[in-house]
Length: 548
Picture 1 (cartoon, one colour):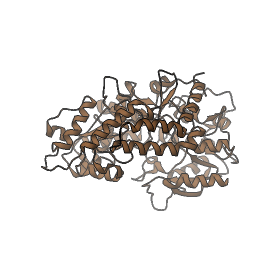
Picture 2: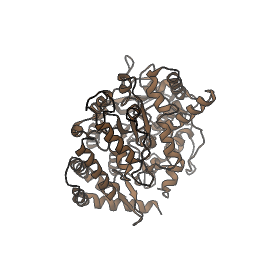
Picture 3: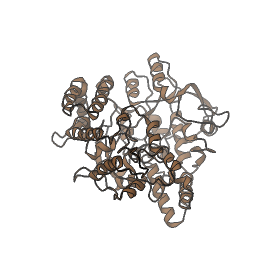
Picture 4: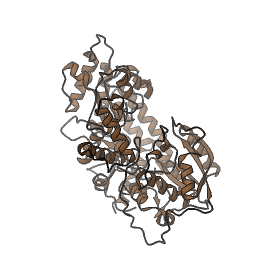
């Protein structure tokens, strides 16, 4: 890997979380690869006669299709065959919740398809087992300039993480990590009912929590509201405690620079985490966090928000789509506003974001046409961001066609670029520079501003007071804090992550629900004994290499 340019490379240039929204945004087509000279092939050349590419397919939850279509036969696969001569043949298709388990069985048996999606851990295992094709040469020969640009838009973090001993062994799912940065969502109408100003500090957020629990913010004469809405998945974005931790400068499941040692330390075991847990314990004892939160999942928290029990929650920019929208439908007087994370002291809050891609796309070492994966990626990028971009490849007559294709990338700035372009069009009235996806979101915002409240969810993301404005603030003020470790899971991570992960969640939950706060100290000792110390050494060995 090349020299680590940590904050500068990631924050000054580009950044995180997938495309949840809208169709794709256009980028320039300047080649950014500094690869050694290799005979360049036509990235748009069509296989003639067509070739078959075997795949295994993961179907996202709530995916719907036009009649007769499926994951292996749809708008994307038909376009792929028509324009590249690649015919997808699915060995099997399963729900995404079952995909990794079924793929692990296939890996163990050696029965692998030609092209497939893997987790970082699976990538490491397959590389160690010498089961994957080296993509270095075919990438240089066949990747399109625009696809190369999008894959590198994160400062090359994804490409570097997919490179082993100088060989590119996978294509990273480069996506917008910044979209996952957390923020505060609260009922502004409840603040107004209680005469409370908008929050400026974390102390203000804590005061609002107390008032929402005790002062009848909905004015229904009943004691039926809670302070902050949390759910059992404490490390999630929506309804999790990630944003709360970050407000105390505590970071879950990520590696941060240690100014004392010059190395990396795990945020989970730092003193700031103990302080945040102590405050959460106070909130639980006072009833501001309801007693049943430890058994509530996403649907239960969504229902609590929809029925007016919860008016303050930590979440991310996309929450208006499904997590908050039912509240607006149930109560037309509800006013949800978003605010940046606020600090418990005079130090600025740094919302944490991931660095490494969540998944990778790989090719079986025995595949006859390893270059096919490049043509698949080229097609995705072109139909999302290129000159022939078309909104139907995102949503086709209401069907989520963007969920139908496996090999994909959104680059690091998709939704933020969409937001900025839409803001400019709202100011000038000139929509000529908007691509199909941006035009769709622009129209939704205009309809909302014109009085159609059914488009509140999109307006609250892409509109003048949308949540992407918070993401833009984080980005412009260089507040986003990426995980300092972006390598593939180390060998001890692979062996011990489930054990240490269970220890973390169980201990944190016990402390929040009343265990002595000093339980945290013994937790740190146990974490180190159960593999944490060894993982820390492996991470710092990796980190030292990046700085050379």
